[in-house]
Length: 281
Image (cartoon, rainbow, N blue to C red; front, side, top):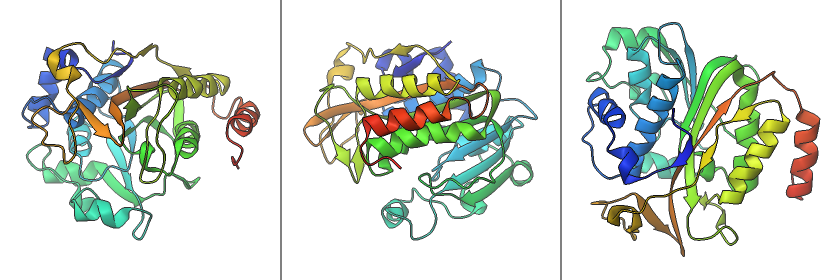
């Protein structure tokens, strides 16, 4: 089964990932966004989450096709995106990457409209202020969103807070930016934060302390020519497995979490966060 790992050419071109390209009606090309969608789908499939009766919660879904795919497979989905007027919302809307109602999510080439409407609901949710009444789910996902929450602290806070909405034994899979240039210096402010190897290891420490389990990390980022190429702004995207963000090369990284007992270890989490981030509340 897949580990918590980084985007690589070799993984993107596997038969498993090619299967998801067909399901999503997407061409297989060397682009990390496609890797994220295929990775999330394969992780959930391997762990028995993509089947009738399972409930899923997606954060900052934008216009991604995963909602239609999961509905087609019989899952009941609550899709969320940032509220109207939220920080950065206009930027995402201007590039057609923001949704504010369920009708904007449908991909009828993936899922019949009647089936989609039966299985998918939408709600505006601020990932920094997740409402307590969302319910509990078999699986939770997000695709490159936690790095846009303001800084490393807020992204880390989200990754632990969202486990409150996972059933015991449930699976969360999140992709985000991974700094492959440095394990020390990085970007830690709006509009993006770039997580380092040590930041993922800190998340694992926190999540384990809260009674959850993080799948083994594989920080290998590939060694083929396409893996070594860093796409510069404005990102021509012929090969886009890594990109230049400021002075740092980054790629996508997926973290997989299996939920334990809800709320266990929360006092330890708060204490650890206060030690790590002075302004944690």
